[in-house]
Amino acid sequence: MSRDFSRIRSSEEYHEAMRASIQDPARFWEAQAERFTWMAKWEKVLSHDFERPEVKWFLGGKLNITENCLDRHLGERGNKLALIWEPNDPKERYLRLTYRELYEQVCRYANVLKRNGIRKGDRVAIYMPMIPELMVAVLACARIGAIHSVVFCGFSAQSLADRINDAEAVAVLCSDGMFRGAKEMPVKTVVDDALGQCSTVKRVIVTERVQWSVNMVAGRDVWLHDELEHVDADCPAERMDAEDPLFILYTSGSTGKPKGVVHTCGGYMVYTDYSFRNVFQVEESDVFFCTADVGWITGHSYMVYGPTLAGATQVMFEGVPTYPDAGRFWQIVDKHAVNIFYTAPTAIRSLMAHGIDHVLPYSLHSLKVLGTVGEPINEEAWHWYKSHIGKNRCPIVDTWWQTETGGILISSLAGVTDEKPSHAAYPLPGVQPVLLTPDGKEITENEVEGMLCMKFPWPSILRTTWGDHERCRQTYFSNYKGYYFTGDGAKRDAQGRYRIIGRVDDVINVSGHRFGTAEIESAINAAKGVVESAVVGFPHDIKGQGIYAYVVTEEPVVDAEAMRGNIIEAVSAGIGRIAKPDRIQFVSGLPKTRSGKIMRRILRKVAENELDKLGDTSTLLDPTVVEEIKAGRI
Ligand code: WT7
Image (cartoon, rainbow, N blue to C red; front, side, top):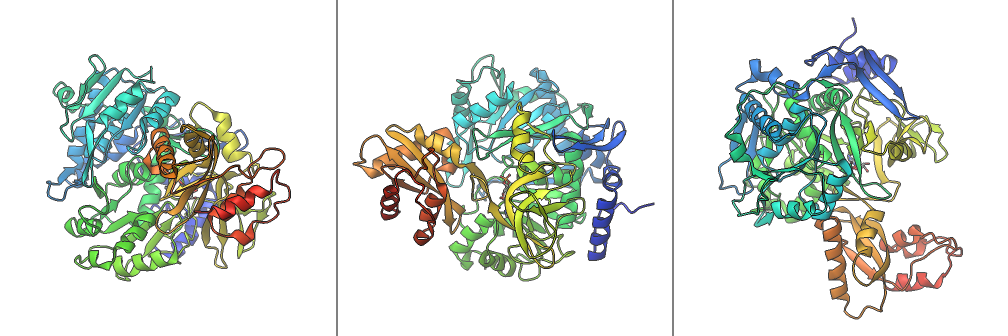
């Protein structure tokens, strides 16, 4: 009998698990899958073909992920806390939900969905702030087999409409408004704006949070609290195939509109639970706090699903790290005795900049493990986190993964495998990363750099991009035949640790959020008076990367501030405020080759202030434009 490696506790076990997972992947993952409740067992563990691409896990298996997140725990953990919800305002009462209470709320919400005509396979858009009803709404969709598409509340009405239309969603779940630091912001009116462009939506279910009067469209909009009057807490979990879609999550790429990454029920369940327990080395009594928003993949995998699958207790926070002051995270850690804390490097850098005085009032003695996600962490931030937050006694896990990977693929296991600043370090057992040369050859030695690819599927790899399988093939499986291409470049050190360098495509990572340069350019080009634009990333102290835009206007710019305001407005309306350029330089033309291609390399070097490293500019149609761009650098 082989070991099941459900919990890897030592470096020896890590290596043993790694070997076992490569030797017989099917057997390795089957052992993980056996931990769950299945309505029918799978007939085959895996079938895959990266060229089509077609990947299937646990074929023929039937399950409902919420039965595993909720019902499965009711016996032993019914009275255990599933959720501690901390509101935006520290003076407002926090809320605690046991597994039984969460189960009942999910069942009731699921019955509300059914009452409103929502069925298995329907797509449901969720546009909500970080309130408990968000977590409940997501699980309620999964309970009835509706495919959720969560849209981060910072996205504009236009972005929301694009996502609703792409998925042909039949319903939107939202709130009246939201609290964010000192601000109160609308949510329902953004939905109303979006729905002006969406014909598929038949129902909007509104949760009350800020008690604003909102416009309710008769026959379309209903209040959640009214609907809950009519339902009970009995809602059998829908029988789903392991390969039925669980959710769609939109993410930016280097071309066109954001694409809907599709994850399925069985493999995603197995991998999020496995990676959550092993990376963070979660113990039964631990309190876990992930600061991400459910609108991003981190909130899906390590708030809604991973922790509940593992039966863990977690903190969900409605607000922002700097309200009422920059000690808010640490105050929450002490208040709820958080043991495992998971955040983004950008948050660490920003709190570091606010100074140590915001940390000193708190003991932080409950902390055992710290994590980061979303972008490379620089050494300075890593050491600050290690010493001032972890008091040099907590391991840090630097977790590398993507929306498309569904779960953490490269990371140390807390306290089990070693750590090194700025290195995501080792693949999880079951994950097979490789570095490729630009022409697709595997580099097998260490102390090298290459394109980061995966040569074997893991259970939570994306299955397709919604409504456009060819785009999925082209983006991830065509650059290097037989591999999944991540879009990242990486180094491997002498010990085999990976260090992620960053994107090799036209994607910018701003505060851990992905934007395509093309997407931002098209939003800028919609501003009045703009002819064309080119966007590149540049190093930014807090955000990791900032957005630098070169803009060509119809008329020479007289009032630069007003024109910049127009452009920022256009980006806010097209995408959301989170994508607004940090710097805007007006230029009379862009550096283009004779075939009309923009030479971004030059624009990147200027934005990075590496003016002596522009390289060869002789192939440009008009080399003089380069001098103007250099001189006008902001
Ligand atoms: C991209 C994925 C995974 C959830 C949040 C972002 C970058 C992610 C790390 C890390 C260096 C990282 C990569 C990746 N990234 N984690 N630990 N070290 N870079 O998800 O929006 O899908 O973005 O974020 O460039 O490709 P995402």
